[in-house]
Image (cartoon, rainbow, N blue to C red; front, side, top):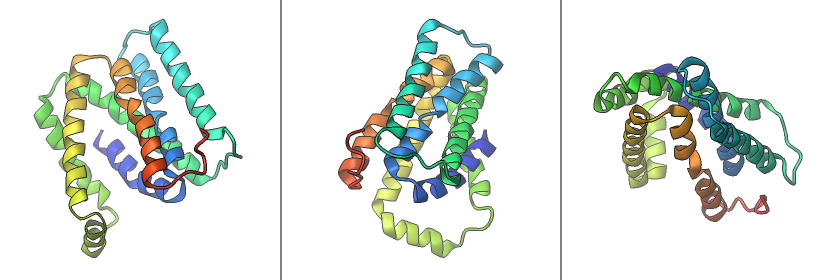
Length: 193
């Protein structure tokens, strides 16, 4: 799981640098689909009509949102976005398998400390980190704390329910992210989506 999260974190910055936030968010919403498929295949979770309909809706909604009103560029950054979604889907599936065996506090700690090693390989200079902190100021700290708290509750939810059911619910924030990208980042080019 640490390797999957590390790969996701390293690659997502490249994707977000080259693809607008609303499209990136939509591509990353494929993660629950990967989690669904992997959970059914490897965790032997139940397959129900409701889950299948949910996956079909996620896939069709993503396709409509990504391709509506523009020519889709299947460049390497688009495929990196798909790979990010796969990394995240695999990590969530592993989280489900492990969360029922390990305490949520310990597992969260391991998953937040472990990837740091891989995120900094190859070496990221302290000057780059300092520049990022200056750009984000106190917001970086707030976002980091909220991220850890959200992840902790995600692990707790996974320990109590099926990944194929929990992850689509958790991932429902994509609509909010797209709206915020339009409002805060002025990504108004695709407002009709």
